[in-house]
Amino acid sequence: MSGEPFLIEDMNVWETRMFSVNYPEHSKNRQALLTAIENIRQQQEEAIASYVAPTAKHKLYESSLDLLDQPVPALSDLKVFLEDMLTTVAYAVNEEFWPEEVQAQASIIESWFHVTENGGYHDTHSHPNCSWCGIYYLQAGESGIEERNGVNRFYDPRHGADQYLDAGTAYLNAAGTWDFAPQEGQIVIFPSYLKHAAMPYFGSQARIVLAFNSQVNFLEE
Image (cartoon, rainbow, N blue to C red; front, side, top):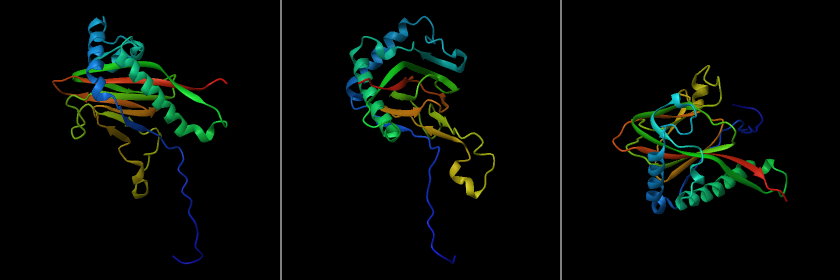
């Protein structure tokens, strides 16, 4: 190549931001959380106590959407951690777009558990009426990335990005999916518009996760 030197500017637009963090109190609170979830599950009259999209869920138990508001210290501690962490995420993503010197706070508006038994799954969906969502892997069971057993699958939100594929579009990922392997104690955070699914899980021990939706609002002065 000849001629005058030139500068190519890299402009990354329409990216999807996701985050992961390990719950620092996982080892300490794990058993208390598992016990609380089992107690609630035993008292449920329906497998899907939220009554949300029951036909999209197979061989799993889902609580009502107020799990983190239950009077259990381990759940209360987890909620405080999650809301502080979500506030940090919101600042990281949005601060340059916010008015100067404003303060914001994330609030978890819905939270629930999934106890998935052998052969269970959750069809593809997204979460309405919130900005950031999360999944906390409390008990991974026999989930594994190699067999795609019990993984959470996230789908490329850029509709039509794979309408033509050649060497120049390899970065788009022809599969259009990204699989996240459950690791106990890990929390994955993602924007609410991102479609995802819990792929079929096979194992003798239940796969247990705690999920949540949040809204972020400016604090009044």
